[in-house]
Length: 91
Image (cartoon, rainbow, N blue to C red; front, top):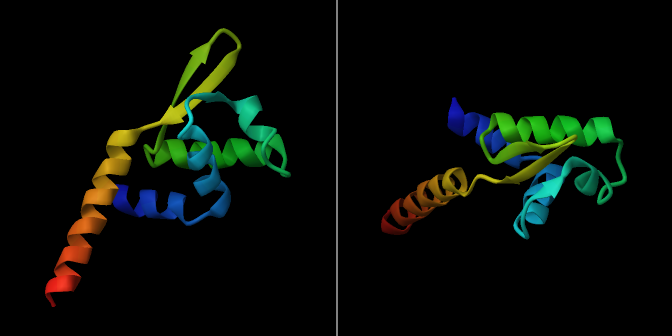
């Protein structure tokens, strides 16, 4: 189920772009919202999907919530994909 949630989260271009933004470091929800031509509620939902898939983490600092990548899950996905590719190359 975890892999299914992860792949679902990665299927959306806005969520992939959020992950790209977070490569540079943690960002507040407001900073992320500023980068997209959609509502704050829409970005909040995207962040929730990414968090449910364990691709990002959030921390509260005062009245702000900051988001950052969870690189361990991304590394697991990359290893899985690499393993699939290796099996395909041997076929």
